[in-house]
Amino acid sequence: SATRTRRATATADAGRVLVALALACVVRAWCRGGAMSSAAVGGAGAGAAAVSRARAVSKTVLSREQSEGRGARVRRSIGNAQVRNFDPFLMLDEFAVGLPAGFSDHPHRGMITCTYVLPKSRGFMDHEDSMLNAGRLRAGDLQYMKAARGILHAEVPASEDVCHGLQLWITLPAAHKMDEPEYQELRAEELSRASWDGVDAIIIAGEAFGVQSQVRTKETPVHYIHFAMAPGSELRQKVPAGWNSFAYTLEGSADFGDGSLIGPHHTVMFTNRDGEDGVIVKAGPSERAEFVLISGQPVGEPIEQHGPFVMNTREEINRAFADFQGAKNGFESARGWRSEIQYRIR
Image 1 (cartoon, rainbow, N blue to C red):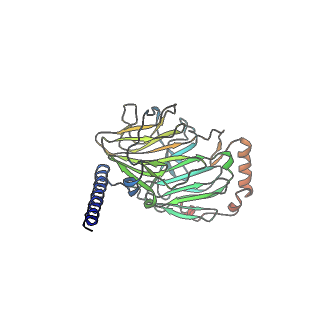
Image 2: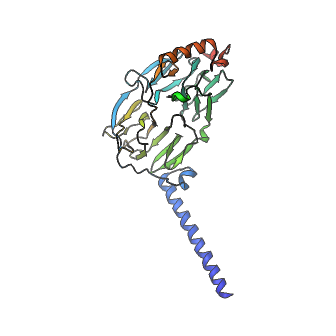
Image 3: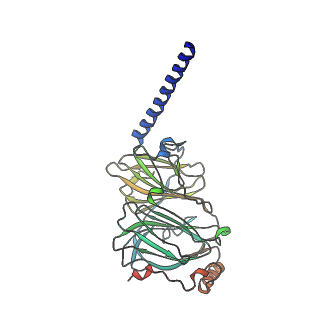
């Protein structure tokens, strides 16, 4: 009986030691990485990625303001004269829009739009579409809309307060261009987050620091991460082999691999060579750096684009116009539909 008691006591003591050690490891990880998400603390693979051969900077382009929609101004990253397409990406706009400007009723076919309202945005963005979906995107919210065979929608600021965000256009493979439309809409608090060594990540799609996004991008696989880096910090982020990758800078400055500090509103395109498995970014020494890192698996098909219609051939574009004008083959819901919110625009 005494022997059994000693064994039980020893087992209990060993258990307490193991619990204490585990707690100590969590505390050390928390202190090192800052306010990490629960998944980043306990998830497998959490921490800095092992990048053995970093991608190099192949091109850097300053995005200048241009007119878009009705009275709106945007900075176009992908989709301008200098960077027409970057398979699978068709366009990235940084918008800062308040009433009376906005984006009135317009159609889409053959593509995905991803609208992300930046966390510091003062204003909100309302949306309505011909399938009777409607909602409001607030600071930090995300809408991932697979337009596919056809949808008619409007995006209009909720007030005169400026809504600041990003809209990304992604092509769909031919096999999915005529799928049914689909929405994924997440509030800011629902997006996955993680931190490591002075780098915070909002994971819109893909993975960072061992934490995955819940957004589905199966038709055209994409990683899309908003990074915020403390001065002097370093990021090592994996990028899948063969995927095209670029960064768009928002605040501060950072070195993306060529030894120069790049400021806001720049598109930084990376090489895509055999053996390159990620990117290494170093924040400037005196200010916080913010940017999005976007990577995608090339579709590898011809891109025929006319505004918001993105198909593979000119004949398919002509058919998209005919379908839209005739409210058929995917545009049935557009017949006679008008959004309410477009009347705010003057």
